[in-house]
Image (cartoon, rainbow, N blue to C red; front, side, top):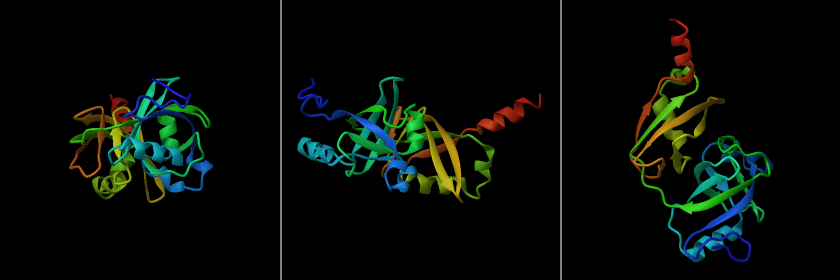
Length: 196
């Protein structure tokens, strides 16, 4: 049920639409390395009023493409009606600068398992890819099956597809012991197929 045209739904949940922009529109380049967004101060007020649980996690939905992802929040300093998010997350959701995105407070189960597929085999050339990934994932709140996440190591960007998460399609990875598996890289499949 909507009231006052603000897109708040019900009294014990939070759901609202915002215009979204990438990190390049705000001087916070660190948000590119993780899954946290920046929201307006009014959202914090609303969530505090509703007594929402921490850590705060949100479902992001692009209504035009029906793409869905999940994220955490870094700060509440955005202009009213606006959120800022990592550019890689906008790509996942098929969003352009200034597009409308629906943000909904969600409670996600703690993850027990995730399977990732690097886009390029040079990811496995990193001396200890699991350790680097573990460090990177500390900047993440959650993972969503079907997303492509980005990690940076030695000034190089690596993209990894989230191909499976348990116990649900979206999981919290905060303070959880989550088993991580890797599928062969996307380009590895191409090179082995061409040898036949």
